[in-house]
Amino acid sequence: MMSENESKTGSPYWDAILNEALAGESELEPKQKTKARSKARYALGDKFAGIYFTRREAECMALLLNGKRNIDIAEELVLSTRTTEYYFGKMKEKLGISTKFDLIEKVMQSDFPQFKEDIIKELVN
Image (tube, rainbow, N blue to C red; front, top):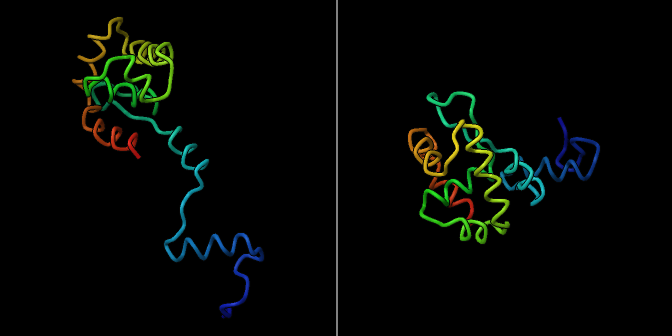
């Protein structure tokens, strides 16, 4: 059995991380959090099987569904309006539609609205 002062991993760095994790005190570094969040995908449900929105697409859509205008969405996400329009274009392409009205209509038929409030809360934090 190991004493409390013995190394568990052979590395002081990894020992500290392991001890924090075991104590429930470990948190991801800001870069790790950002990277993990950027990999997030939001499925639209069974009706739209295999179609996912990226984190940024989901953020744009959540704000749009919350009544925000494109310029307000861009400002809130610290993006240009051209970038937000690009994200809306990608979402329309994924769903095979051409207007923002159709995009909103399709998204409202999907499972996405149940994620909307969680996405907005995440933006605030």
